[in-house]
Each structure stands twice: as structure tokens, then as C-alpha cells.
Image (cartoon, rainbow, N blue to C red; front, side):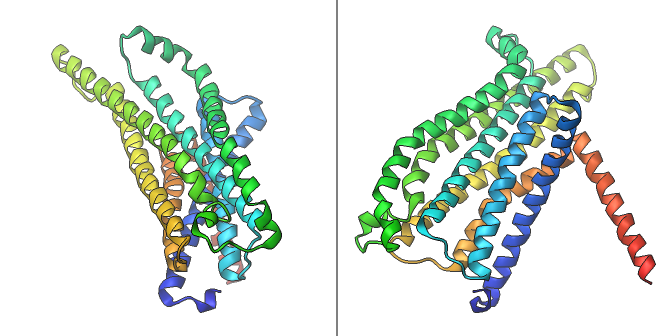
Length: 321
């Protein structure tokens, strides 16, 4: 299949592979570091729990996406309809799980850094360590329950397609036979919007908290570059990066849904599919790099690993010369 691609198609395929591979390495690195630490201590703080859950879901999602695309493009293996649906539903579950993990991580950051005198806010701030894992589980459970009726109905309508392995010519029937994204992507949009909304609220609260803090410092005649201000700015910059990439990912989902709808009537090119896949892989890949660079523990481990790998490569080079 790759041999039949144009130069532009091969270039797009290489870019897609690189972006996906970066995401797999980044999220895999976070998963290994936190997993090893959990294995040693037999416990995990809420922040590490969210980070590990986020990296695990993205690692599985990116790896499955990469394998599926590579099998189709390199060796031209077209999966059966049922297996194709399983891959899509796995991607949908882990994609939404990763979004909820990232959203509650931003809320966790916000609650830990900001300070307001509101009684409800103070209660949430005191209980955030206990609430975050439960809120994550509740969010995923609500999403799965929302999708369950559509899931049962979809597999009921597509049962005969698995026997014939053909798609009906009627366009309305094809929407429920081999095109699961057309049915299930619309129900994901409210959850995407809710994720963006919670992240926006977290950023606004950080901005308000930073503004009030700097105003109080100016009134008291103290310099505005104290430790708390630096923490505010660092967390806010991290959340702004996350919000930007999350918004780009949201636009990518819309483009993906539109391309799937058009596929019902006419096939879109492989290049279009690769561009959409690359677009949707940028967010989990870039966010994993940001997480590593902004986390002191992960940054130290990554720096040590890179130095060890460089020294090992240099020693191999000297031994062969």
C-alpha cells in the first residue's frame, strides 16, 4: 500500500508515524516511572494517580491507533467489520478517559494553587485529594452509561453485516453498518465541551487568584515576584498550553466526524486520513512532553535517561572504531 502512495502521501505517513511514536515514548516513559515508584512504595498520591491514568490511556490509544494504521497502509490488511468496531470503541473509551484525566488534573492544579475565602471552595480544597479519583471514576462511568444504549442498538443493527461482510447501498443504512463514528461521535461532543468548560473555569480562577494576589502585594509594598506568584504563573502557563492543544484536538474531532460523514457517500483519500490522524495525535504527544518538562521528578529521570543513553552510544562508537 505504501508503494502506491505519492511522495506527499509517504511524507504524511512518516510525519504521522513520528508524532505517534513521540506520544508512545512520552506517555510510556511517564507510565514506567510512576509505575515503578508505585511498585516500590505500594501507594500513589492523587496527582501521580491522575498522571499515570492519563499516560496509560494515551499509551494504549496511541499504540492501537499506530498499529491499526500501519497494518492497513504497509501490508494492506483490512480488518473485519467487528474488529474494526472493537478498535474504534477502544479508541473512543481511552480517548475520553484521557480527556477526563487531563481535565481533573487541571482542576487539581487549580485547587492546590488558588486561594479564595468561599466556604464551598475551601471545602473542595481540603477534600480535593479524596474527591479527584472518585470524580474521575464517576465521569468515566457516566460516559459509558450514556453510550451503552447506542452500543446495544448499533451491534444489533450491524449483526448481519458481520455475516455478509458487505455494506448496504442505502446511505441511511450504511450509517449504522460499518460507520460507528457517525453514531457515537455526536454523543461525545457534550463531554468534550464539558471538559473544555471545566478547563476554562480552572484557568479563569487561576487568573483571578493571581490578579488578587499581585494586587495585595502591591498594596503591602512587597515585590510581585514572590514564590506564590511564580507558582501561579507556572501552573497557568501549563494549563494554557493544555487548553490550546485540547482545543486543537477538539477541532480535529470535528474534522474527523465531518470526514467520516462524507465517507458514507464517497471515500476520502489516504492522505486526508493521515492528516486527520496526525492532527488528532498531536495533542496527546505534545502534552506528554509538556508534562515531563514541567514535572521536576519526571524531568530529572528523563535527563538522567538521556545522559545514560548518550554515554552508552558513545561507548559503543569508541569500541567499534
